[in-house]
Length: 183
Image (cartoon, rainbow, N blue to C red):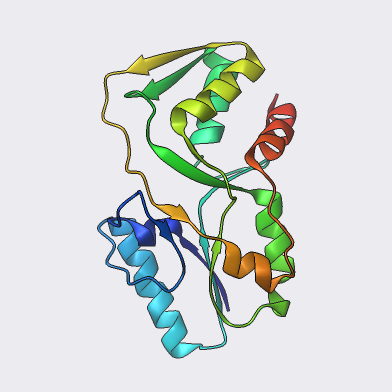
C-alpha cells in the first residue's frame, strides 16, 4: 500500500522545531489524529507499506480542497485582490504536485516506512501572498482574523537520500510554473 498522510500528524509540536519521521506524535488537530490512526493501522496490518506525510500540495488540475496557494491565486484573478488573515505570519511548507507524482512513481525503489514529502522551503503566508500578488499585480488586504496553526518544518532528507539525492522543486520555480498555467 501507498498511503498519503498529512503534515498535520505533527500538530501540537513546537513550530520552531524541525521534525523527522521518527519523532513521537500526539497530534492536537483532529485531522492529524485521524491520519496518524490510519498510519498506525496500515503499518500494523501491512508492514510493507509506504506512507507519505504530505505538506500542502499545490499544482494544476482539480482539487477537492484547494490550498492557500490556489485560493490566493484564484482570488487574485477573480477579485483583483488577495486577503490574508492577521499579519500572515503563519508558516507553511508546500510540495508541488509534480514532485508528489515523481515520488509516487519511484516509490517501488523505497524501503517500506514513513517519509515526509515536502519541499525545503518554509515561508510565511505573507511571503507567499506577496509573490502571488506581484505576479498578478494586485494588492494584499490584511484582515483582523486569527491565523491558522503553523505546523513545524518537516525534514525531507530521509526521502531525498532514499532516492539518491533527487531534490524536490523549490517554491519559486514551482510557483512560477503553477501561476503561468492557472490563468
